[in-house]
Length: 388
Image (cartoon, rainbow, N blue to C red; front, side):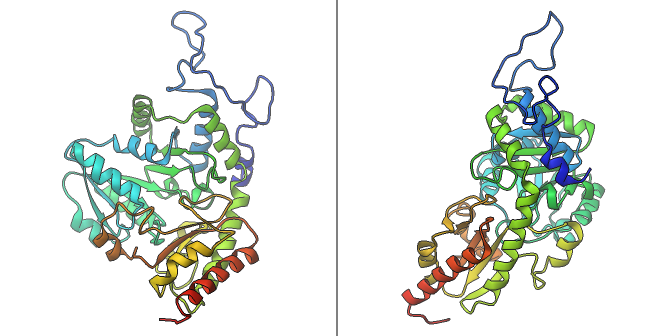
């Protein structure tokens, strides 16, 4: 069955009792045992609950994995995965990285003796030079947030298998609709499901999908033991959002490509980072391993003085953190999503004070371009209209 149909039908065949096409929300945290030594399959909601189970099965199916785990946030999903590692373990991690992931590694996991090296994960020479005898996994964002760097998943998977390392792919930005890393050799896929999977800026959630029986059992143990699981109401909201994922991702993609091309031609813009544009260094790999593009990208203004007035003058586009919802959002990574990454690392990668990140929603393209164009024009007027 095609993925569009599988998405639209999430939960619609699972309520055998009533035939409801929308799977019900089971708020119960405890479940009766028929008799001693017997169970309905549900005992306590932290371990397993009906609504969450349907969501987790759908996640595993969509990513072509063996097991799915729904967590209370994307960071909770990461924390659950990081619990696979022990004191003295070392990770190789994408250089251009979401600030919250960097914060967790450097300020929390470091307390437990887990270390990380941050590299261009598409560079096999860099992987080799930073590999250590205690390296246990490679954690890759592809594309990365916010500079949209692309890693060849099949290439890195082959390398990781030779080194007996786990390959963990953050698939938040493309979703299983456009990219399925497990089919390319990944062991674990994670999502901040708050973003495109939920799609409506109204649910906080994370998802993990694993491949392999032993790994799936280990993550199931951690998921239950740590307990950062997704509640039934949020599980239902996430399933409802995922039903329209195919439609939304097509619109996000189309809008973002058209706006990126418009910005690329704007005289006040220095650079646009979008893998769909032919000049992007990851364009070819992205086209090979993915069937489409995300709705988020970043662009760099020529003059830092335009940043504050642009953010002040946008109206339809909201100046807000997060991404992946139907509403367009713009973020200033240097002081918001990536503030926890040291200045020297941010600037070395290119996340400087002239960079804006744009999560393009599903509004009409003409309205979005008009809003952004008016904001840029207003900013230029405020600084005297001079181009650098």
